[in-house]
Length: 144
Image 1 (cartoon, rainbow, N blue to C red):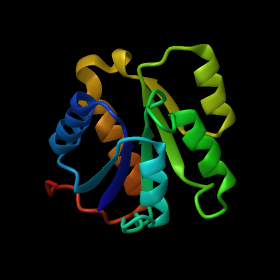
Image 2: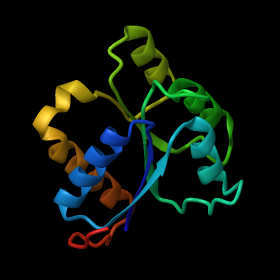
Image 3: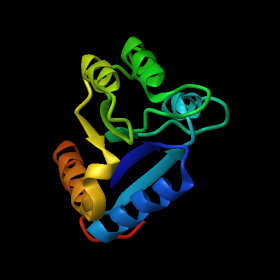
């Protein structure tokens, strides 16, 4: 089972990611957090959330309320239990300062949503392939 924590506050983007992962045919568990605060609670198993089981990848938007993506990244990298998490920034931000800050926080990738267009399914397949390397034997044909 491929586990993905999507940290995204835009419901349309959430639906796009869900659809793209469904189309890959890869068994997945997509957990959605609406901001960095909620994502940290999920990762730590706090506030009534069950802790997200490893391995997982975090797909992270930059521009969110309460705690934005870069603030979340700094917190994750400071936490010894979370610091090794694989994070891919998936954002509308083309700001070089955001890209540099994310890269300084050791992200696995920085993807601008507008560059994906219709190839979002290819992106989802790539993420699933990456995770199947982390979790050998993950089922490749179930829907979630």
